[in-house]
Length: 205
Image (tube, rainbow, N blue to C red):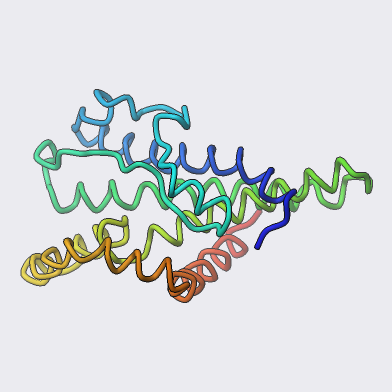
């Protein structure tokens, strides 16, 4: 369980992470020809356009959670499978990029700051931003509907297998609820989180 300081500092970090995640989805969909995110006001960094109350609370307390999904219409894409795959990848990728930025900022300022209460809080804030972004990306990469990972997997599978996989969609929310309540979500998220963390460190400046 995070400390009170971490919970307080997590609030702006989460608002930023959620906004980047959903803007990533919306921006790629818009660039691929779908005007739906623009019409719904989702091409913005305003966090109140993207918040899901329960998903945000989960992020504050457990570093895994979700935002209000961006609605898309794949009929606008020249290649529906490819377009949906790219849009689904865009959200987690946006968080990985943002996490990479905060990780490198943390590495840059850490040896240069004098030890004060303010500098200690700043370092915790930067670290929380890294954790929140990687946590949001990792959770959304779980291949269970309706998370991004399920759409990514469906786009990578052969069409016949993708169709069979899509038939599992109605059971996805129930399975996710079981994982979240039982704590099993951590078992699934942690390996993805570690891979993203290693990627972040390998690509650091």
